[in-house]
Image (cartoon, rainbow, N blue to C red; front, side, top):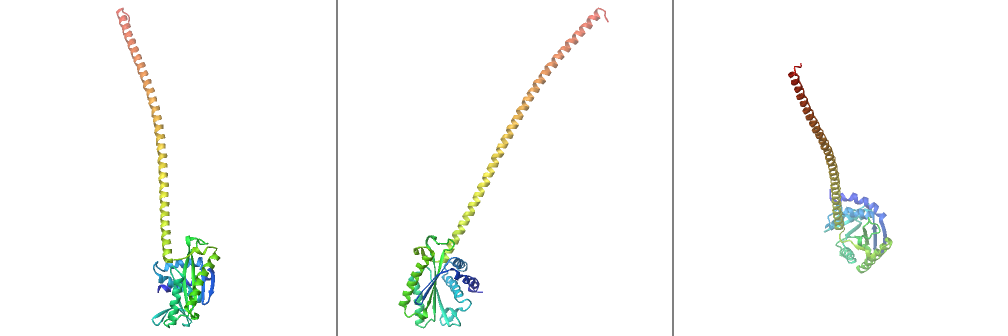
Length: 307
């Protein structure tokens, strides 16, 4: 399955919601300008990032071509119909209506005029048959000053009935008026200065850079959380260590006090033992004296004939 076939079901669903985000439509001559803002446009931006690479301008062209075809004609029409050496972007009703789709990066009035003039020139030279020209591009808000923070872009779609264009000068005048007038009108409806509505140089690159920036911020945030958790663990360990140290000191102090008490008790016992030894010695000496006196008495009795 081709990439376009994979994109179509998703973009068809988005196209059904696109009308809800259309905030302005203005017409002059053969030119009609549509502007879309907010949720659906952000869905388109996200899918541009998902479906295409940052440098793939053809990817932006294919996504917007599919989106706008389903928005205007639903499932009517086919893409990429071969016509001589050219390919028709969109052919509706078996080729009775042919649409050339152009997308612009970093839009200017001159770029819009160049795209339209090129298709008109090819048609006049009968090299390329197109009845309408669709030109699509994005605006963003300078300094991210969007009225709604989540909605960063405006999608602009210029629909030109090229079959009704008389000359390129008139077409260019209508395009100048439409690009300038619609920007002012959109700014008024959004309540912002039109000077802050500026072209997007490359929406895929912008989205990619913002995604990378967000991923980097997320990684840094996760790192900060890990470091904070580490600090908490260290603080807890140090607190536990300090508490354990205090407990050990208290325990050592208790042991010292118990040891001191034991030493004092041992000293008392030693002193008491010494006293007992001294008393025992006195008793022994007294017993010896008594024994000697008893012997002396016995000798005296023997001498005097006493029994």
